[in-house]
Image 1 (cartoon, rainbow, N blue to C red):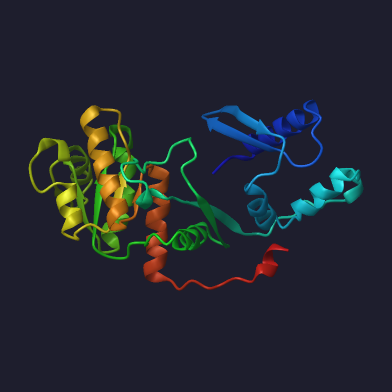
Image 2 (image 1 turned 90 degrees about the vertical axis):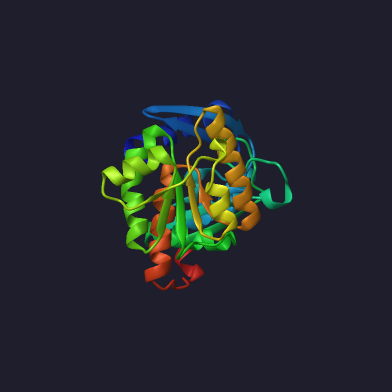
Length: 273
């Protein structure tokens, strides 16, 4: 989902930084993209856990290439092809939230994961599904979905919600979100916010086994922040899958559809080499 112009800018800035710092061998750069702006968060003169992932997804033996550079063989002498595997590759984090009581499981820029898994396929939804299954957090195939998003994302939620209904899910949402969905003809049941102190709320539905998937895009208001923290914490304890971004919701819904309607096929490792 990154356009070619931005990818070229990333490649050019990587080249400039590498040459400017006179780095020999692997180095790691963390970029951030906001709109049309490209930011460098940090540069590390070492390899990282991303190397095996990039090697598999590109089909290039990066460790061997870096080792040869280190002993004095320049890149131009190695005749490295511009290879791709023709695959969509997804790296998914594995989180320790169930072991860390009280920690809000909402992802952020800080490192919270303790491991990573990998999935690949010719299609993005199947690659994402494979990676998700490897995390051992279930992919919902039936039941109810609880939806609550900030105002800016309410319209974007509509097609995701309709897809969940088409898959047979019962939808639950707080007032503002449910109003938007009903206005677009999406059937939904309205429940109370946790902060309102009335029932049923999200925690009730989760404990009763009525919710098998949660979309909770955090907001900055005090009550909503506390609601989201409590909801995500209970979701971890009950092993209920949840996403905290609209992009995550779109991909999760696509993976749920694939899980219900299709059969996953294993792929040979030789497609990567």
